[in-house]
Image (cartoon, rainbow, N blue to C red; front, side, top):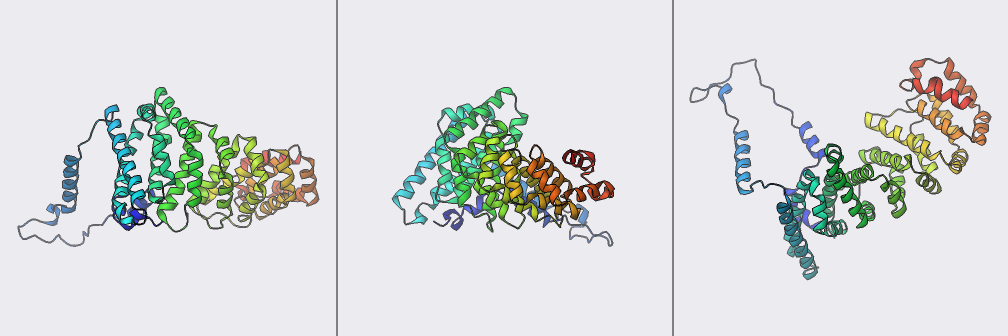
Length: 411
């Protein structure tokens, strides 16, 4: 079903994403004053130096009128109950309107605008993590999470933004022990109400292509997953057991074009693989070794074009090194000609040089077949050439290449 809110007036009340704000700033540079000629006089004798910024005054007046019409309330249990009651009311009204007029979207559009506004109001709860247990007690979590499956993707996007705010890492880092415990309680309650499954299912229906809102929603979903892993490390294995997130992440890595979501997908995948042998083995069974090799092969003869792309390449090699921990994945690496690819990368002396040496180190540790393949394809010739080359070729991986990486796998 088409996005009803987009067809009516919701677009005017959406909050700006970080990407949109950055774009707005880049396209609105500060105007410079021309000092080559004196300022023109005004009719009342004032000069330009005395001119009042009318747009600023207008903004101040609007802000004051808004604050009068919407007075700021203290965020306490009473306010929380009012917010939840208002949300639940609009939530039920939207359900009833959709059931009553399933073929007349114009008749339930207003209820979805109201629902959107209520979800925006709930974001303020992220500033009071001590109220999370009360939020759970009020039994509003199931209602909020059910909206991840809402037919209108704009509503689902609102929920994703809310979840990211509630689980934001800044809240965790700045809070005291009691609030950290409240955060853990919230994350575990979300898990009990199937948030992992719902988030991944929602990922699969977001286009992640030309729609900026949906691209931002994909990024926010990955951020929410990362936030929950930081609070509860067990989430890393749980999300791989219960969902198809690994398949989705591999699909992102297969996309040739670089974007922020591909970068984040590589980072999330490395986090999921870091301390979980189960995830390493599962991804290996899904042809993950070959997919990651294809992703890094794009940089065998070229360097990343930006700092973000460089970070993605580093994350890809982190994924590869984690994958090479289980013995069965070392075998897959050799069969997929991973040894040969790493040697090619070394010969090219591009930015991925040091990462290729690190990957070979992981592949050949306690696995003789990989060592034999390395010798058979004249890998020692390339390795010893590194000792005779200029150190500038290997910057910024000089400390890795000399002597740790090369010496380790030559042993």
